[in-house]
Amino acid sequence: MADCCLSELAEKIEAVVKEAGRILINAVRVEETVEEKSGRANFVTAYDKRVQDFLFQKLMKILPDAVFIGEEEEEHAALPEGYAFIIDPIDGTTNFMKGYCVSCISVGLLQAGKPVLGIVYNPYLDELFRAEKGKGAYCNGKAIHVSDHDLSEGLVLFGTAPYNEELSKRSFQCAYELFIRSLDVRRSGSAAIDLCNVACGRAELYFELLLSPWDYAAGSLILTEAGGRIVNTEGKEITFDEKNGVVAGNEKTIKVWQEIQKA
Ligand code: 2AM
Ligand code: CA
Image (cartoon, rainbow, N blue to C red; front, side, top):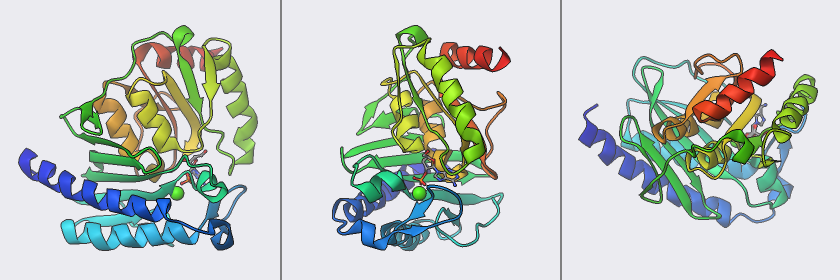
């Protein structure tokens, strides 16, 4: 797709995502609509489904040829050679359920299996992160960049993969090793928001040992377009057709992560 077409598309998608943000802000009696999915601490609310339906209706009008892959669908389509939306209608569902107000809508657009557009919108802060492949990353229209601080001057964000109990111990061990080498650790409950916070230099490293592509499709492009690096937990390129462990930061902080894994 030509650059101008992608930018025009991005404007339209951004407007849709912002409109969807109103559904989160106006949500009432969320806890009455909660259902448990498979695994521990894995929930869905009626609002996740409502936001996903809204995005499906609007996004497929904007780009009818694209395949739509949404977290709350019963079956997920395979990644095509052409365009695919990979969306998380609410990233940070447990926060949303609890009224903790740290959740976002994440929309990635992939072409031939790689992200070309990423939008992450946190309606509680009215912060919209956006990146187009090769064009840099922006927060509410302002260019953003990852921090170049060492880990010793940095904050570490991490997710605990709570739905996967066998990873819990290793998650906290990694967090401890990073905690003693950094200023402090934080745990937000939304992978997409964490990736954006690293992208804009509010934190220096993020990791979570298991995530699904909709958790990081948009955020990974925002991070790399902001000059950051993202790899899987084996240090290899992340993929978008299966679950991945994710590590994101600047070159220096990723190196510390890798040294800790070898020790
Ligand atoms: P969610 O809020 O959309 O469910 C929290 O640790 C992060 O992990 C969130 O981004 C959360 O996304 C994601 N997450 C929750 N359940 C998951 C699962 N079963 N597999 C992968 N990631 C999950
Ligand atoms: Ca979700």
